[in-house]
Image 1 (cartoon, rainbow, N blue to C red):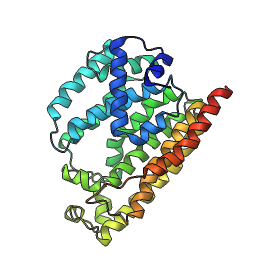
Image 2 (cartoon, one colour):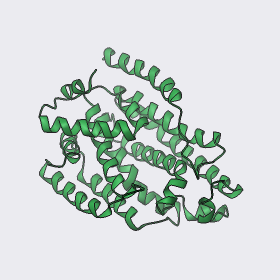
Image 3 (spheres, rainbow, N blue to C red):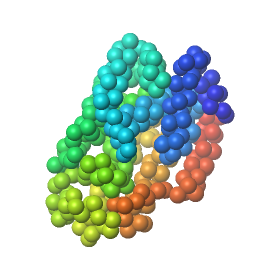
Image 4 (tube, one colour):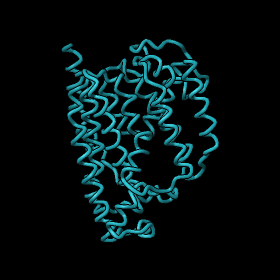
Amino acid sequence: MTHAADLDAAGITDPALRASYELCRRINAAHGRTYYLATLLLPPAKRPYVHALYGLARYADELVDDLEAPDPAALLTWGKRLLDDLLIGDSADPVARAAVHTARTWDIPTEHFEAFLAAMRMDITRTGYASYAELEQYMHGSAGVIGLQMVPILQPLTDEAYGYARALGEAFQMSNFIRDVGEDLRRGRVYLPQEDLDACAVTRADLGRPEPSAGVRRLLRLEVARTRAIYRAAAPGVDLLHPSSRDCIRTAITLYGGILDAVERADYRVLDRRVRVPATTRLRVALPAYVRARRTRRAR
């Protein structure tokens, strides 16, 4: 099915709106390979809305995370306009237009976007977190609310699904933090809790060296174990979603959880490089899931 057909299936006909959704899809395809692959397992009518949420989040994130030309002032201006547009129910911004339409279509609370933007603003000045409890507060806005935004589109069978979705967003975020330690440090930030660095006798200087020390390996083992525990806690939430959404989320869990396996296979050498889940692995997981997803849709 073509991307235009996905928009047709979703009933999105306005040309400007279709262009905005297509822009968000391209952002997802370019920057969120795992998320994009998992999104293809959803029914066509749901895919554009997921692309819109991802595109919005990625666009805002790049304003503060771009290694060469971050633009925090633009984030502040753009974020204020987004919140205004959410109240109006429409936007002239090419990225925000689709997300605002998605929020209106699926009745996604504005407070989730407020929390997300608050977390992005924290990245402008915040360089570290003393404890995991502090980091969790940040992750609520940077990742947990992304899961909460997604749940209406995934069609929960019970409201209990929301808590599991928030936890899953946290697990995805922690996987990123573990993989991107070196890259984040180049931005001046450390997302692993200082209390964990202290417990493993690790300093920021240790994280800036190409070769991980014994302490850095202890630290990363600790964070990998913690993150796997979060994945296990979030997993029961998959069965609380509509059957047509389950293969998408299960695949995302398998592939994003695979980042932790890749970190271990690399012997925790993540300070000077980014480990990746091989494309062959992504396809080996996604293709059978795609067949199951199509079978599920045909059966209903």
